Image 1 (spheres, rainbow over the protein chains, first blue to last red):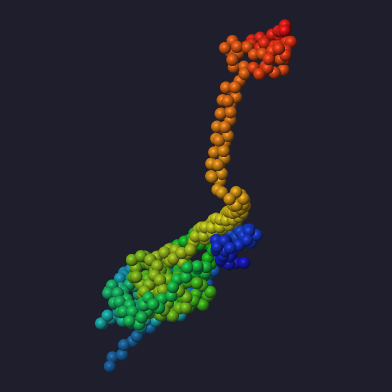
Image 2 (image 1 turned 180 degrees about the vertical axis):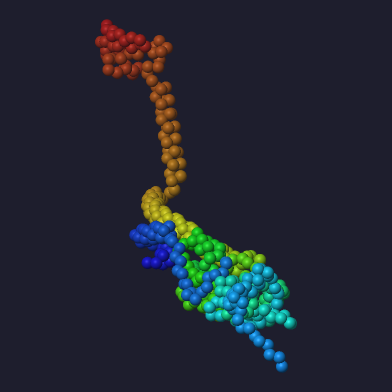
Length: 66
Length: 403
């Protein structure tokens, strides 16, 4: 599951729980799923590292001063 | 006719210089005498060689001087024939052709007005073509993960953009296209950079550079750059120079950022912290919802119990009412009345009993006669008794009777 999908699922679970039309069993399952996704996402964010892909133009002259 | 004899032999003491030697002497004289020069004139026969060197002549009405600008010398604007320029350089000699020329180090437009007029003319033309219309501008997405960046690899701009994105949203991927941002060929390179980035899976493209003079920023005022921005499929943010600098690319782009740093802030409108906060908010919402569900369930159970209990009590009351056929208040009143009545009856009986107590006269000194079992009333004669008991208040004596 991708990060964005996890965030979407967290939003979804929060909404379902907020509506409150769930049994105690369902509620417990959803709540556990939500907390576990939230923890995954937090970890993912904490170790995020910017990726830089260099698309170098072979013919470019990089002699300018700026 | 007089024939002159020409002596082809030189004197042994004076060596004949070679062409190169002579040329070198000429060059030395020119370079030493003139040194660094400044000259103004009109460009003609401009040629940009594939090697990167540029050749042209600088002329006025009467004269013309060859000029060369070596590869590696930056030009801050597009050199064209007919343009009046002021250049700096040194006078030197090009030995293979025995030609003196100017070795150009910098070239500037001679009149500030020239560039400004060109800028205004293009701006008006593109405005009329609808290039700046807000309706045709693409919205900048909010959840940006892939960012195309076209700027110089050596300037502050690229550092500012990268550090800002890294600080705010390190989940992003930057597709960096090092780009020539000023001088000859820069406009063409920017156009290529836009086209390359446009074909990559980026969400948005930033084109830009750090601050500089109007000449430095000139590539972003070129029509080919404006066209490339206009035709791009991806949204483009133009971030050229400082806040006060406006270029054609700023007007055509889907969004203008005041500075390269500002452009990086725009593409990271949703930051990592925003995501963290979002997760926190959602988790709190879940906790609240769960608490509410549990509370509601508890209430439901309690309420159910209470409703059932109340119903049972009510039923019993109804049964009792039916059996009695009266209401409870009147029962109580009735009971009280009867109790009072009985009390009154008892009181009067007690008085009667008290008034008829046979021992009452003893307190006054009277005595009672008894046969030992019961009192002897007036209806009985003492003749029939041989002995009687005389009962006084504090003593009882037996006496014999002599008949």
